[in-house]
Image 1 (cartoon, rainbow, N blue to C red):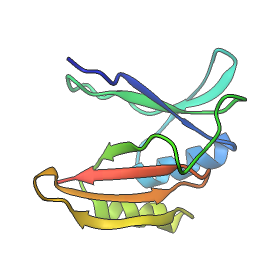
Image 2 (image 1 turned 90 degrees about the horizontal axis):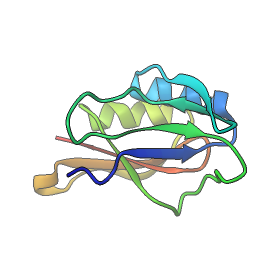
Image 3 (image 1 turned 30 degrees about the vertical axis):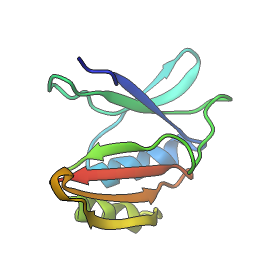
Image 4 (image 1 turned 90 degrees about the vertical axis):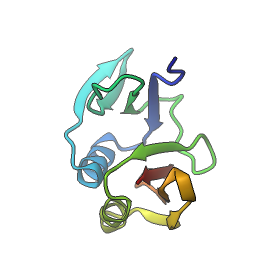
Length: 120
């Protein structure tokens, strides 16, 4: 059973956030409006048990470094972190080997959210 099916990352400036995330994760986000809120959708993963999400703007979407931590699984944590820092992200937790769980790192995005990375 998969408990997480969707996530939304709050942003203030959708265009700035889209440019940041497309560069960091080397993907194209799909712009849309859902329930009156401009959003940018991450590509859907076709793997069973995977989740997808969006960047979202609106009154109830308030960026925070202190809220829920979303982990993005990437092939190369160090390279992804470097792209985030290159585009104005701030280092919050360096690339760290955490044993069986692999490698993790954290950065703040251009909107002020804490974003985590994980990989082998």
